Length: 97
Image (cartoon, rainbow, N blue to C red; front, side, top):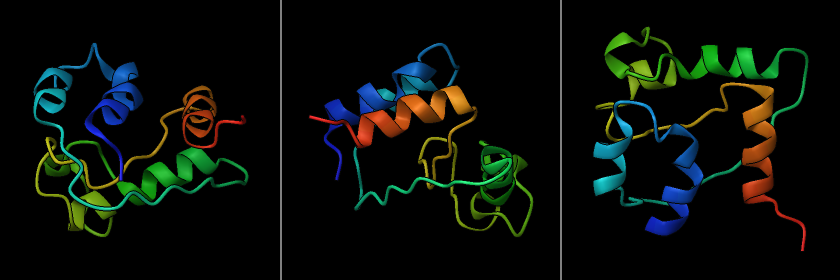
């Protein structure tokens, strides 16, 4: 599980997005975190299609967010939005000592 501080540090790249202040103010990890690194041609794009739009109201049925997420404030699933952010996020979870 992530602590509140770890979660805030992880999502800091989103600090300029409208939902961040509301999200970070009440962020509490409700369950275990499963971290995976996906490889392959267009992996970021393909995974984003699987998880659906960030706002569950905009996510298509058949996507993780479209079928499971309750609100934009409760992040059901996270997926990097670019290769650059994927690199940052992978290093966050799999930092070398």
